[in-house]
Image (cartoon, rainbow, N blue to C red; front, top):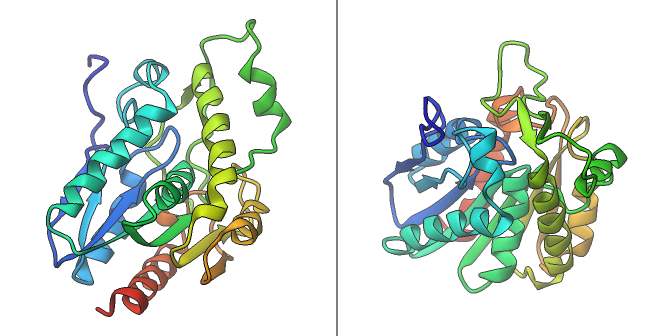
Amino acid sequence: MTDETILEGAEPFFFKGNDIGVLACHGFTGTTQSMRYLGEQLHGAGYTVIGPRLKGHGISPAAMAKTTAADWIESVDEALAELRKTCSQVFMVGLSMGGTLTLYTAAKHADVIKGAIPINAVVRIGKADMASVVFDRSMPDTVPGIGSDVKDPKTTELAYREVPVPAFRQIYALAGVTHDLLPLIKCPTLVMQSREDHVVDPTNGPRIVKGLGSKRAELLWLEDSYHVATIDFDKELIAREAIAFIRSIAGK
C-alpha cells in the first residue's frame, strides 16, 4: 500500500436526494466510516448527503503529517461547493473535529449554513498530556492514537493508531480559532455531547452553547455513548434528532 492508497471504508460518500443538502464531516485521525450510518439515515429521510474525506485522513499518519487545518477546511469547502450546485438549503453535521469544522463553517459561511449539528465537538482541548507534545522538539514523529473511544464492544472506529505530532498543533489552532468565532454563528444549532467522553472534555458542549450567537441553541446530552457517538449506542437517537432538527428548519 502506498501513502496515497485510501483505506477500505474511508472513501468519501455522496447520496443524492432532494434539494436539502447535508454535509457530514468526520473527525481528527478518523474517516468517513464514523459518519456513514448517519449519512445513510439522513439520505433515507430524503436529503442529499455528502461525506468528504478530509485531506491526509484515511490513508496513513505520514500523509496526515503533511496536512494542516487549512487543508481540512478546504476539504469541507469543496464538499460545500458541491452541495450548493443542486441544493437550495444546506445543513452541516460533524463528529469531534468534524463538529469543530461544522462550527467553523457555520461562522465563516453564515449566509449558507441553515443549521449546524456539532457532535462531541472541541473548542477547548484542556488536556495537559496533549498540550505537552505540541512544541516539544524531543517528541517522536508520532504518538499513540486517540481513536475508537466507543462504548459498544461490537463496534470499532476506523482511525489511525498513531497520530503525527505536527497534527496536534493544527487541532489546537483550529479549536482556538473556532472558539473565538462562536459569536458569529447565527443559524440554529443543535449541540450533541456525550456525558462520558474520553477524548473531548464534555464541558465543551455547554461551552459551545454559551458562546453561540444563535437565537436557537440547544444542547442534547448523549447518555449511552463515548466519543465516537455516531457509531455507538446512541447512533439511532442522533440520527432521529438530527432529522427532526433539520425538518424543523427546512420544512421537509
